[in-house]
Length: 185
Image 1 (tube, rainbow, N blue to C red):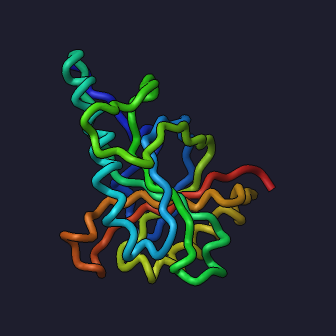
Image 2: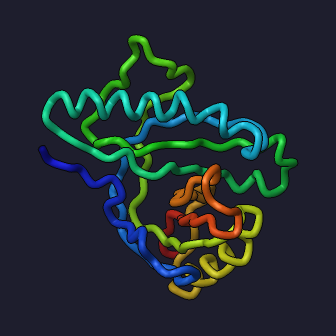
Image 3: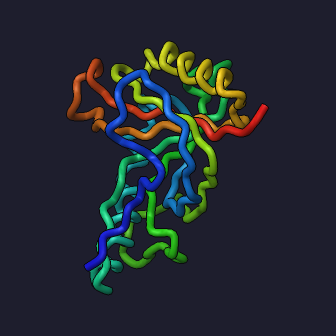
């Protein structure tokens, strides 16, 4: 059985606080939108999202292919920074093989999930270790790095890849990759 790589272009073992620039291909994902405070809304959305991803995995396995369900991703528009957390909007996603054209539907609890392609291209990213609430300094380091390399972020491309499970990891030890799509200034 062949195993498919879902984090092509990224180094999940990067050192904390040291930004990198990489090229990342388009990624097919199963996604679900979140409205409201991620601290209270996230747990409600994980079951349908993971049910859909593992449903696709089961179909692939039955056809002799294997892919590991990769780390959870979240995209958060910049507008959230001026909103009350209860009014935040965003999207959670799990990468799928790029040739997936349908999500399983029969007998599944997958309300509100959708199949979409997330575009990437050139990206800058950094590892943050600690609470999500303390990401500000890490984001500043990344934004300074992007600017000093003659690049700028593409609007509303803030993405987080959650390397740690917040239900099983101390807040101070959470590992999150913070990523922006970038282009020349």
